[in-house]
Amino acid sequence: MNVRRRHISAVALTAVAALGFGTLTACSSDSAAAGDTGSFDVVASFYPMAFLAERIGGEHVHVTSLTQPGQEPHDLEISARQTAQLEEADAALYLKGLQPSVDEAIGQSPIATKIDAAGLTTLEEHGTEAGHDDEHGDEHAHEDEHGHDHEGGDPHIWLDPVRYAEVAEGVGKAFQKADPDHAADYRKNTAALVKDLKALDEKFRTGLANRTTDVFVTTHAAFGYLAERYGLTEEAISGLDPDTEPSGARVKELQKIAKEDGVTTVFYETLVSDKTAKTLAGDTGLRTDVLDPVEGITDRSRGEDYFQVMEANLTALRTALGAR
Picture 1 (cartoon, rainbow, N blue to C red):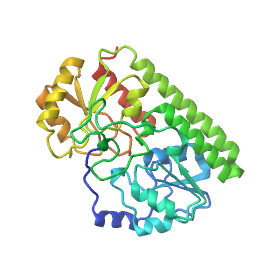
Picture 2: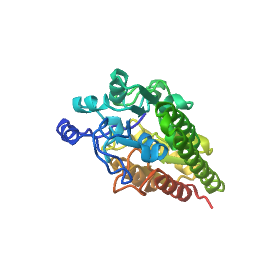
Picture 3: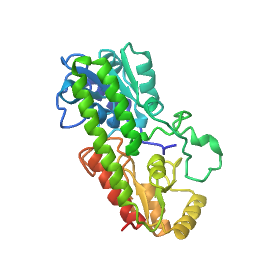
Picture 4: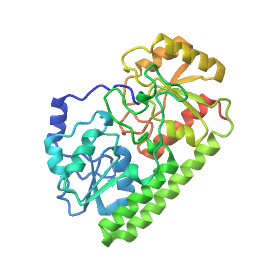
């Protein structure tokens, strides 16, 4: 479903693992190893899960992320040291189907509280390109070039604020059950987060209400839920290596779509190369811009947290779709 990513080398992963788990955001600077903090220790698989844990857990949790800032989460391979540290945590929060090595490590760990975000909302199937089967038919709707199996559905649920709020509510209940001494605070923090997510949903609804086109083009088929939520159509160049040019047939197809549907922009993301987007844009006379799948926050991100980056995405979509 997603384009091929540049792999982090084994040497780099070993170096990262040697440093232990890194915390994800500036608001959680303690880098102590999981299981050794005196807090409710939560290991999160990647940024959207860690963000939930931090917002819901507040001062009572110590959150660590298996995926380092700037690392493409689909490419993560768990090290032996990370597996050992994972076993000492109080809870694991992950999204089954997105990171196979994480699924395996958590499945084999003795952690008492295992929270699968995919089980807290409904997942749907989104094809490689919205409304278009590729030359291999439907099979690529479930498996990307890494062989990642997405038969359970598209995992990118955090890009839909409504589904993300459903996940937040489930995580909050799991925290309350696992750490009952702080249940009242977890309940309060969950309610505040859900309120913020509902406000974000409203911003998208109103911000995209008066637009000249419904179609947007991306290099990564990550925005199916967002598109569905707000009545949009995502056309993705998924299945292509970001370092190679799109096929002539796909360029021709997208040229036709762009002309017929008033497409103005080819979107790329911050954690992979923009070469494919720029090549397509040059061939079709379109502009390029960032639409961030919020899989990680780096100094290249248009914001410091999930909400800021999502609002930047809304601004980019409004421009691309001619919203007034």
